[in-house]
Image 1: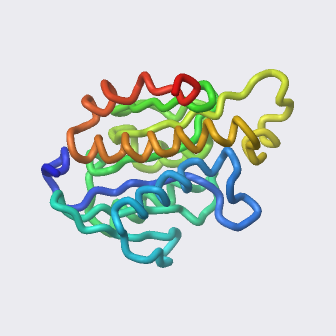
Image 2: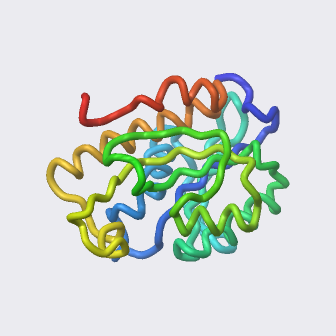
Length: 200
């Protein structure tokens, strides 16, 4: 592994979701699921509570990877992210957010170097509090007209083939996050922005 893109010694990967067993496995918790995959792959320390989130750490050749799950509920995610950035004295270039996205097809993955919040309330909270200069990995949970109320859809648990698609996309999202840290966001975009679990 090489140095983190920002040249620092700590890189934070935050997965967005809602805390509690009632939300586990829902479409809106793709970020939580992805950072749990990263924690296993990197043999991270046990999860522990700190301020408004859960965090664990992994020591790598690049430096310390900090994995975070905000415990504020989705709409206030930015509060936890802001605390993490302040406590570890991180610049936005040392931050990656992983989250679900209804605007791209289920099972796809997209990497971006910056940008706005789109339709995602958790991302809106983050952008409002720290700005836009951080990378993000989006996991598609694509909503169609047949799904009815948006809140019911994102808080629902995918089943069958959709669950399998999302599981493959989550593995790819974790790989994309590692690529961002190892090779930079531009390389991760080239490698993962064409990913579609349906084509595997």
